[in-house]
Length: 192
Image 1: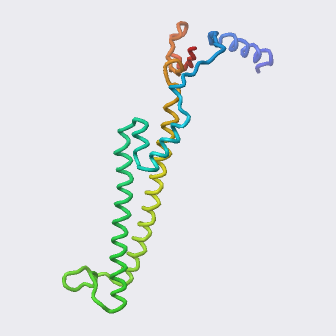
Image 2: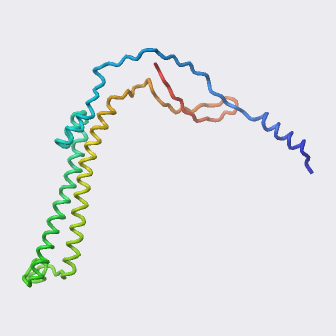
Image 3: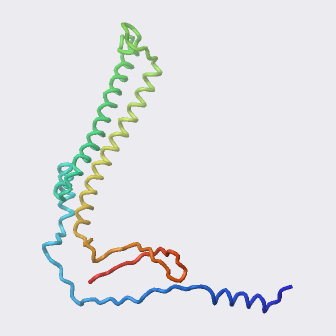
């Protein structure tokens, strides 16, 4: 049927008709000296923010002048402390009722005088469940405390970086005049 020269002919025609796009050349001029303003950079700023947050939660965020984060820190830590306290109270109630039940004394879950009726097995399961939840809420609260210290330190570190328009990444949509199609691209700009 088709011979080898015909295949080669069609491949050459395809390659000749393919449009190719290239990038424009960009000239970058670099200065040989870098001037660092000593007022803009404080090497101890992240350590100070972490120390302040460790002493009083939210104080590191205040040091970084991120005041809107303070209610989030106290809300997270307050929720963890409330959950711990609530689970500890319920654990102690179930434990006290179980001890009274074993000693054949009336407790708040014996079903008498309008009290709810819980079996001894239910009290044991309740103790295990509340203890597990209490311990988990303690771990979460400690984790949130450490997280707010790390956040304050990281934020203080990142506040010292240059993030102005001299360094930017801009997405661009370019219209190709020959095919009238849109081409999506990105440009990275370094201005010195």
